[in-house]
Length: 122
Image 1 (cartoon, rainbow, N blue to C red):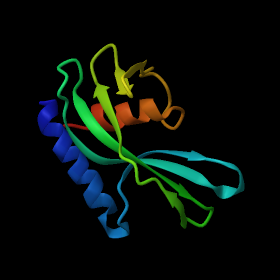
Image 2 (tube, rainbow, N blue to C red; image 1 turned 90 degrees about the vertical axis):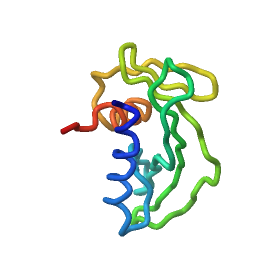
Image 3 (cartoon, rainbow, N blue to C red; image 1 turned 135 degrees about the vertical axis):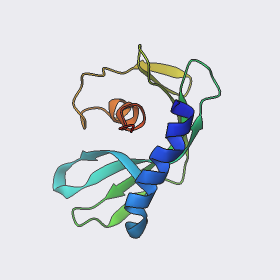
């Protein structure tokens, strides 16, 4: 079921941001002077490792207070996400436990997990 959901999630998020040509942003951190850094889903597929549900590519962009892009990281950062307990995000061969009770916006790993694993299903 999750293998079907990923394309739907990415498609829905892409469609909702297509007009502004942004990627599917799942986490934004704000800093002094109105600057912010956004993490976005650039690509996703079912995980190759059976212990995980999704393999995704994350991009990073920095914006000034007016929304102008100051920096767009050209690197493609890969991560794997496990939805079931224990919830987990893997980056650079490191596994990070996800506290599913955390509020959105507190931790990028939680926000990535939530974007993929808690999407409404009809």
